Length: 285
Image (cartoon, rainbow, N blue to C red; front, side):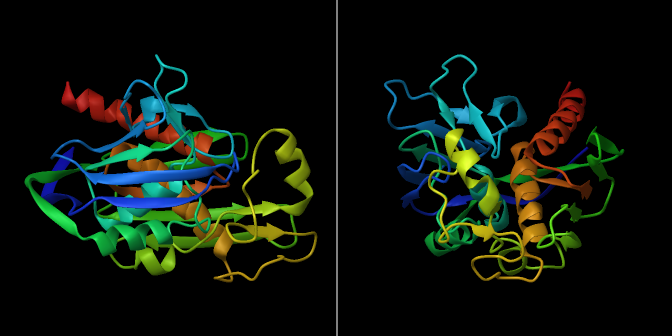
């Protein structure tokens, strides 16, 4: 069921953000531009001959290895990776419609969190539009599971994420955190939490062409018994997992429900997002 509440929003003016890409290690630049009502979030590559617009939605996801990558199923080159932090920042800023031009195949990682993007979006200013915002209300439990990891969304009057993180590693261990959108400040509580990685995995990831742009400036590095760089929160790891859930769930636009996740990653998030989309399409038909 869709609920119509306040007006949709877009940016007042264009923003340009530059930085290094987390996985490719290449320099990247994106232009975030105001978009018309009911556009949603649309990406396209500036470096390709064809301007292939790729809408941020579950059906556009083409890769889920260590990030969320969307792309065209017809033009293989037209893909954009590591969109999840930017998507979370867009959600948190209250924007509904945006066109995003990307200089290459990946989004800049900035500091490994969503906060720098959030700051830029708010600084630019938002413009209210005429059409009402449509928010999808979850009316029955939907879930996805893989082995001992799962994620579910339950009917709820609001948007809430309860996440349980459990790593067989002394620095992370088990932790739990809950984010409720209507009662907590996304910018302060969630958006600043950075991505993290293990020192023991760096060489293997590099061999796979991943994390080539990773550094202490854009990720928390975890050694056998400590983090190399200081944490922003005592439980930064679980907060970052919630940030990823926010970004991946925004593939369906704004939704209302209570998400409960245990040890879930991008693959499970998108599996749940696909199931939610099926329900949305059923109602539209």
